Image (cartoon, rainbow, N blue to C red):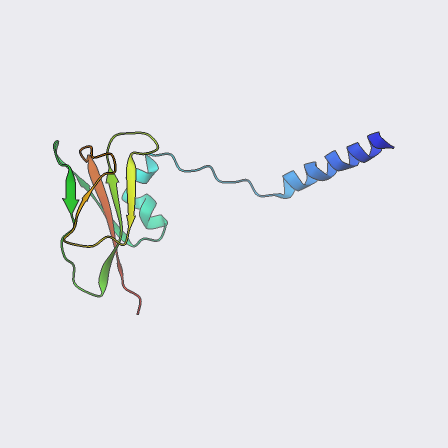
Length: 115
């Protein structure tokens, strides 16, 4: 009886496993270093700016309403903590990476403000 219950349980879990959609793998860090990745995530029109050596902070220029900055990605170093993601950054404010290392590039996104 125990073997039959165990076999039934295994079969039920196998069917559930087959019926469940596969989980998407998290994007690799390289994908997050493209404008297309953030645009696909719905942050608006994104622009990547490659920075020369020695740049430790970045300040966004003012933009005219109804446009707003929706995202700022600061890239410094490599690995899982290379990107600092800032939601709804402000223009005129200098942003630095959390590691205080120089920035290699930034990505910012702009969208129309919803009223």
